[in-house]
Image (cartoon, rainbow over all chains, first blue to last red; front, side, top):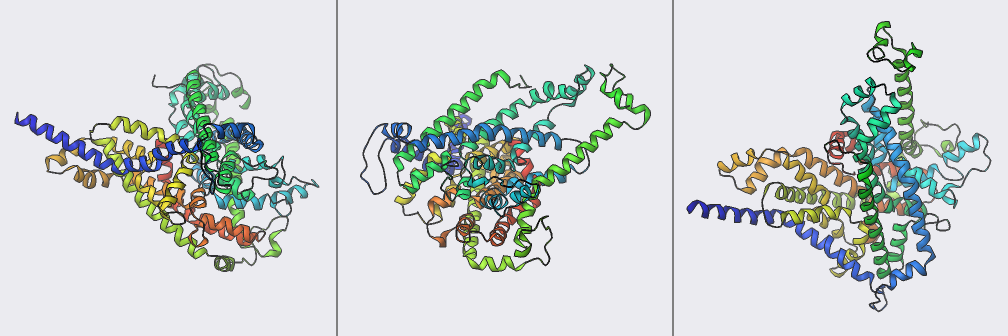
Amino acid sequence: MLQEHFLTRSRRHESLMGWLFATPWVLGLLLFNLFPFVYSFGLSLTSFRIGYPTEFIWFNNYVEMFTEDPVFGKSFGNTAYFVALGVPLGLVTSLLLALLLNQKVIGVPLFRTMVFVPSIVAGVAVALLWMWILDPNIGLVNHLLREIGIRSPPLWLQDEDWAKPALIVMTLTGAGGATMVIFLAGLQNIPTELYDAARIDGANSVRQFFFVTIPMLSPVILFNTITGIIGAFQVFTLAYVATGGLGGPNNSTMFYALYLYNISFWWGRFGLGAAMAWFMFVVIMVFTMAQLALSKRWVFYAGE
Amino acid sequence: MATTATQPPAVGTGLRTGRRTGIYWPRVLHKAVVYVLLVSISLFFFFPLLWMMTTAIKPTSQMFQIPPIWIPRPPQWDVFHTTWNRANFNVYLGNTVLITVLSMIGRVGSCALVGFSFARLRWPGKNVLFLITLSTMMLPFQVLMIPQFLIFKEIGWINTHYPLWVPSFGGAAFYIFLMRQYFMTMPRELDDAAKIDGCGWLGIFWRILLPLSHPALATIAIFTFMSQWNSFLEPLIFLNSSKKYTLALGLAMFRDQFDVDWNAIMAMSFLMVLPCLTIFFLAQKYFIQGISTTGLKG
């Protein structure tokens, strides 16, 4: 009787302490995440614009962006291009780097550091650096191109056709970062017995790669693909800095997140901006869910 | 020797052919190829940073020479000093340090507390809250930024530094998850022993588990430093007077003013990345551990 009383008292105390310890996050979750999340959906159904009266307009913002706004379609297309080309290229580069850095040769820690470092200095400074390297007149790349006899090299960021590929190349310099490290950790987790067995069965290194490495790495590939796509949808700083926030030339670098920023904080159209943000959220969710659903067909979990 | 290796090896013999002659030429060739690739690729990746540094200290006359000059003579070291004083970089640096340090304190503290609660204590609603926590990782900032702006505007926080560091004290899903995973790996016997010695939950957290979690705390502190130091979208939205700017924002605005003065722009860019590089070289092991053990993006 006494023991039971003691137990429930200590359990009650534990519950109280549990909530107390979790208080910062309960507040953070409600104030900075869940409330804004719900609030933004509400906003997306209004005509909210700084300096104008607000009305409830149901789904008219969504209708407007799909039917009346050509830049919306273009910005979505730009981001789709970036996801479709930049994400696979980034993944392949990271994987190749990881394979190379997984070789057992002397000096690998030094090489790993050199490849990793560019990824930690992301942001404004790197955007500026690449604007300098790719400057059409005085940049290093065009200097070299002229040197080898190309008379009119591309204008890169100032050329409608070259701006997006140039931005993708910029993001590739970060391929030696987190994604590569995760691949490397995945590679080092593959038991060497599997390679021994494959070799005894007569598999050459190409076959070992496709029939041992790739299947064993598939959960990591899935993780990196999902996070890569989510990141690519949100690409902002690079495009903003490289184009002064304008997304030029001719909206060729007007990425979705950049347009969303301009609609909201340049034009003050918070209702429309919220609708665009929610559409982005839904697309990311659908992509992630689809990836997870499809993954059952190709991802191999060694533990199962 | 090289030809025998390309033939399909017979079981039991193919693996050993090299050992008999002493030097296994395919392996030497393989190593040579690996080294050539490693050296050229890592130089390729590292090159832009070197270019940033060398551009900054080049006299204008050597800027556009081909082949490029790597070690300028004489190096223009004073570019750092003079450019720094051309804009409000002192103010930007002060703002950035303030925001970064407060965010680091807030995030490390709150994530440790909450992670402890998720890992060690039993309380009603914990599992549901944990699932919600994990799902917030999928929320893009874009969905939250407009309402956050309106809320901060309502309470008079626009053009102050509060929106940039106060939310850190509410924790962040990624890092709470990281702390929880870390605490889960510690044996529960530690708690029990402390309880017998009369320690309460706060004592277990503060005196027993926290001193053992330096690696996880360091990882959170470092990642928070990196993200806050380089953060661009948040300061862009929440700040509007140049006295409040952070380095990232100030640097972008500086470029707009000094359009083609690449010496100056690269010098300031270099100063901005220098602390990140320093911290990386000092704490490299926490980076690699933090990323690879949790699959976390830096």
